Length: 431
Ligand code: GUN
Ligand code: ZN
Image 1 (spheres, rainbow, N blue to C red):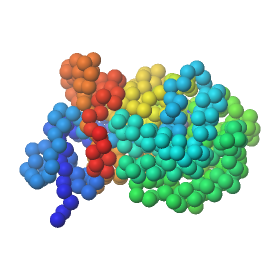
Image 2: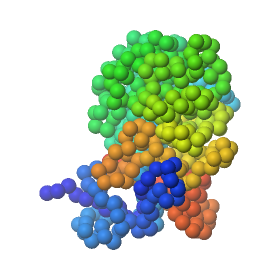
Image 3: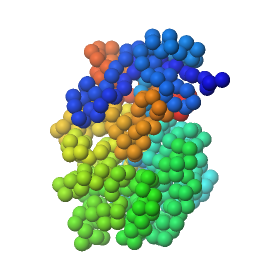
Image 4: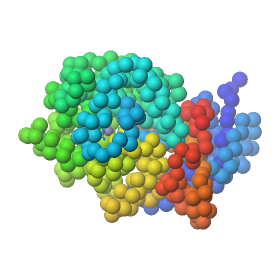
């Protein structure tokens, strides 16, 4: 007998093109009454509800009414070990790392603690409608094992890796070039492409990775080019000055990675706010991605990211919470913050840009666009149902909407986990 089918019913928004390449309001198709057929963990078909009810009459039906069915959100940069220190007051990047982050990360050598936080973090992101994350772990291999085990227990496609850091950090977190290489390689062999898991080679950033360590990470990536590579770039001006001091002969911050092959398709540069024209040109021609972390950029006081300008130059852009430098687990709140930053930047993003960044854009940056961030047949059944009237304040505004973008935007600006009515991960209902 064939695998059972499920037919999800509701409103649907489905991108047909990249909203940064044409008129954003025309980049998606809207079905006011649509359906998605799922079978064996995948999306089989998408279309008008009436037709699918007729052609898939035996499918189990789950009707979400006026709720909006979307791909689960893809958070392209997070630090799951910082779950417990999110929303810590009063510091900028470097003293925030020293005062809050490094002490907390030092606890993740304990596999029991790591498993507790990994499970808590993934349950929180699912509750907020996120079905894929690219997360840093800590320098302890146990922190990586805990994350992949928690992800597999929930059927999630997660990108994760051991942080390499061998200088300017407490001893409890420091590894070495050799250990970073050996431990990363062992974890990569154990987890990369096991089920839905993907490994990311993860040098924290130049201030905490020596040249020898960056070289070792570059060598490992050259041996395993289908892994991702995630790090940080030009987040805060003090950080850039520090890199200049540590690497006086480097042309700029990006060059410290480029020199060791840490650039190209699959490279994910978190933040990327204060870039020179040369760095922007090199990011574009290399096919690298930059990941916008708007709640973090305002929370730590980092600066104004240029999403529209970078996309127009052909640089791939993804969107992320940067938990716990970011102040939210919610990609809805993150889209709202990206809108606010775009106002400061003077190139205002349309709701279609925001939704695309939180789904297909982040998925493309991760080179997972065939599997996640989309409702296309053949992709994973990672689907959410959003209530566009989840609070009285949102409902009274959405009631006046003249089109789907105007109906969705109040939830982007004012919504939270109360808007997330349902979450399907790999065809399994998880909320
Ligand atoms: N740069 C290096 N490490 C970190 C981190 O953990 N969070 C943020 N926001 N920036 C970083
Ligand atoms: Zn980060």
